Image 1 (tube, one colour):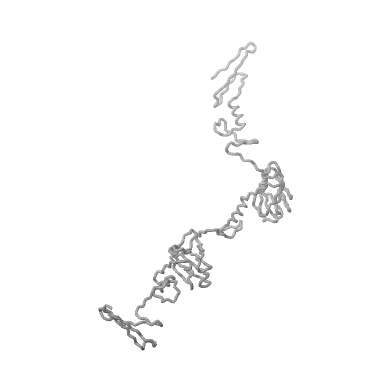
Image 2: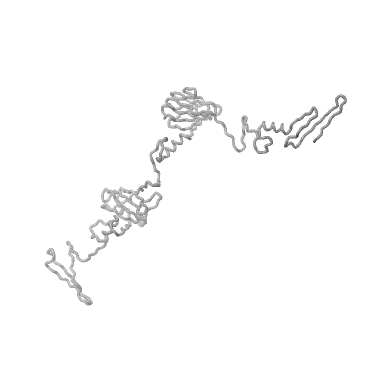
Length: 393
C-alpha cells in the first residue's frame, strides 16, 4: 500500500519449543530491522517495555509500572517522588479491599459528595493520609486512621458496611484541646484541691455549700430530704411543722438553713432522733417571727451555727423608715444636705434664739450667724426712782 510492505518470519525452533515470530515493514526509506513478537505465555521482554500506570489502590493483576511503584511508595513517604493525591469518587472508595493506605485529596473528594473528616470547628483538611487499621472482610465493616499533614490533627474512623462513609472522630491533643458536643468527665469531691477538671455537678454541689438552693415551703407540714443538703428553706405557712432527716443520714458538716417568713407566726423544726442543740437541746426547735437559723449535722444531732432575726431593708429612693431611726448630729451651723436629728434642732434653736433677761445693768454679745435680734424692754421707777433704758455699742 503506497509502496509499503509487511514481512513476517517464523523460526520453528524457538525458545521453549514455541516458534519465534519476527516482523518488519517496508516504507519509502527501505526495510526496518526485524522485531520479535512476544508470546503471551511467559514472555521475555527486552529493551524498555511500557504499560499504562494503575492507580495506587488498584489491587488487580495488572502489570505494575515504575510510576505505579513510586506512587505506592510515595504514599508511605518512601522514595523521592511526591505521592499522588487520590480523589475519592464515592464512599466505597474509603473501603478498598485488601487494606490500604492512601494520600487523599480531601477537598476534591468532598466535592464528589464523599464523607470527609471534620474538626471541632466544622472545617475539613485539604489533604491527608488515610490508613485502614482493621477490617471484617473485603465488603463489610472496617476501621482506620486519618491524619491531616498540615496541622497534625488526627481522626479515628469506622464503618459497619464497606459501602458507607466512615464515621470520623477527632482525637484532641493535650495542648489546648477544643471540645464540642457534650463532653463529660468524673465529678470531683467538693473538698478536692488541684487542677482536675470540674463538671456541672461539681459546680452545683460546691455552690450549695456556700450559696444554697432556695426551697419554698407553703404547706403546713414539710419533710426535708437528705439530698437537699446545703439548701435554704423559705417557710411561709404560719405554724408550719418542718421535719429534718436524722442527722445520721447525712454527712457530718451538712447544713440546712431555715427562714421563718410566715408573718407574726412561729414555725417548728423537728428531728426523728437526736437533738437540735442551740444552747438548749431537744427534738424540737421553735422559730419566732422573721427568725432564721442554720443547722449543721454532727453525729446524731444538729447544732445551731447561726441564728438571727430578719430586718427589712430601706430603699435608697424615698425610704419609709419606722421605729426610732437615728443619725449622727451635724455640726452647729451646718448648711449641707445632711439629715438632721432632734438634738441638732434643739441646739440650733437654742443657739439662734437665745432669751437673755437682765435684772440689772449688763452686757450681751450677739453670737456669730445671728442676723436678727428682738428686744423687749420695760422699766419702772421704784421708790420715786426713774426707769433706765437700752443702748447699743
